[in-house]
Amino acid sequence: MTAPTARPGRGRRRALLGLAAAVSAVALLAGCSTSSSGSAGGSGEVAKDTKANLTYAVWDQNQVKAIKANIKGFNEKYPDIKVNVDVTPYASYFTKLQTQGSSNTLPDLFWMNGPNFQLYAGNGKLAPITDEVKSGAIDPKNYSSALNKLYTLDGKQYGVPKDFDTIGVWMNKSLFEQAGVPMPSKDWTWDDFQKTGAELSAKLKSQGAYGAAAGMDGQTTYYDTIFQAGGSVVDGKKSEYDSKAAEAGLAYWTDLIKSGASPTMQQLTDTTADQWFTSGKVAMYQGGSWFRSALIGTDIEKDVVAYPLPKGKEQATVIHGVSNVVAEASKNKGAAQALQAYMASKPAQQQQGDMGAIIPAYTGTQDAFTKTMPDADLQVFLDAVEYAKPLPVSKNTAAWNTLETNLLPSAFDGSKPVDQVAKELATKMDAALAKE
Image 1: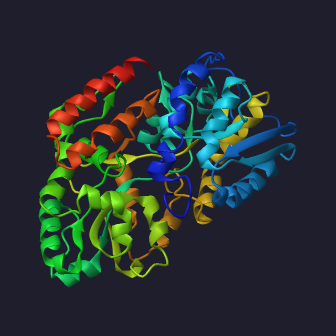
Image 2: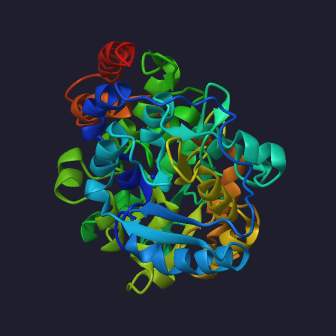
């Protein structure tokens, strides 16, 4: 989903910004599909004297330095494959990509996110990694199974995960001390979170501070609790909001507000949950691993520690990550797949992580991330991969994301019952899914 604050393109913003254009893109891309047999292309290896000029499209200028370091390593093996890194700001990245997709002029290699993936893979725009896996150039076992699943459609995997983010709870130890409330166990439950939040709010009331913060961001809040309740958000062409588990996952947050443990929805609309936390007015903030970039160098950095998400019926967190994909229509597909395979390799991923560009997706290359805030226990976000579930997506994710944005506030502000809103959302979401 890459950074709401200092690094454009991470987290929910990565997943959702620009998605509105994807609605019209369904028809746009569908009319210009190319054939994707699953066996065309290369094995991730080409002759060392291969000559090609590749375009690698990305949206984050902050990562270009590390990318170019990777390309230097790639060119040690393939000196005659030239790679041009094309950076387009995220706000217009997918608009540009849709235009290129409609004319079959997509970049040779480019970044893809979960919410847009099925649109491109389903319309034959992406080359599967089938041959690279068969040759051993890419081994999916080196990456989170949830991330692999996110970039798999109809049994074929197309994207190679390059990075990831998970969700945890950022805790301000100083506010716990001021309130005289002990830090909870990291083996905590929903009930522990709710009670701690309410107790903190009561004792911090004179300071205008709260124990926790709710929020309307699915990736960092209600998707996680729906999963923890044993439910899901979407299953193929069916919405899962009309289920007891989904209602429980939503009620977790509405209950937090009702108890006074969290600011009201109006307060959170005026000032977002992350801003409440960075200003020292919220003790517990449920947010993504990318949030550490907003904390480093701040007055509260020394007071912050990360906790795993509280456990509901089961333990779960949302995971999302960008992947590298190859255009099916690329005139240099073999060379592009060789670059795709190299970018997915352990040396390249380790280099990306060590240079601070990302949390690399390749298992065992994430040590640099934990060292950026050595006293905050950032290992929590890495351990969460074991029980992570992929960000909920479909072929036209934007359509029902809009429904969530329009309908859920009435549950969060208490103007309508959770079950009523959930049923209405499910009905309208089913209609949107049926049109995909």
